[in-house]
Length: 168
Image 1 (cartoon, rainbow, N blue to C red):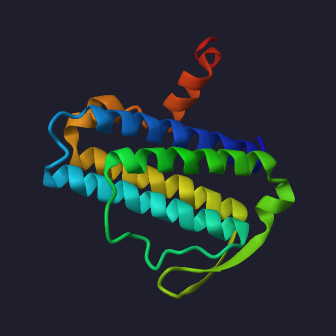
Image 2: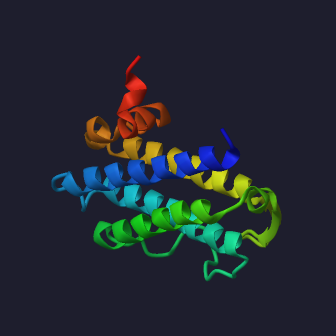
Image 3: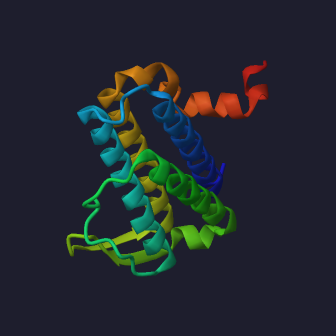
């Protein structure tokens, strides 16, 4: 398996897990006004902002974010479609990337002004692991969604997306 194949699979897993979590959040009754629900959206928005920052870094473009959090947290109806679009952007990006693209080191500036340098594959790995961490955080904030979103594990995703894997 190549790094590109693995990262592609991880980005597809990220998109599927985000979609499951967004669906679960959309079905939670009477939660939108609770402190925990607002905190969960803030965490998801943070992960999304970081995704957008790294998308800009991967493209060698400047982004408009002064921090990895935004002052205002969007409501789920605003946040969900932008998360889905960004997830698709990453899937499309990896589909076009070559092995040499992924190995290329990219210089960028973190939102705090610190200089950074990572390979493109390291950036993509960061995006996957960072979002997974925060999906887990949302599950801890909103235990009511646990039964719906607890399938957020890579092995489970691989077997759901490719059922022949479960056959011997």
